[in-house]
Amino acid sequence: MVGYAMNSAYVQDWEAQSFSEGWTDRLGVRPAWRGHNVGSALLIASMRTFLDAGLDGAGLGVDTSDPDGALELFESVGYESEEMVVLYGRELEATATSG
Image (cartoon, rainbow, N blue to C red):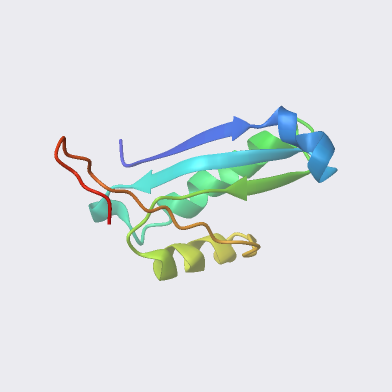
């Protein structure tokens, strides 16, 4: 395996957003295969699946340590930035205190 795309459809959101949309929740390419169009091929295949299912659009969410490089990939296949989400986390310990 050199890459993967995990896709979903959040049907419960479609009425509120006024359109149907397939969603690429995760996209990954092994480091040795980056720069060989694997990511764009996976995104294009995902979009074709959404289109074949009769959906109106495609969205994506990607966990990456290189958002600039990822943005270039997304834009190369036609995605446009609409909003960004940043997730923060913290490991909890039994003795954690507030602050």
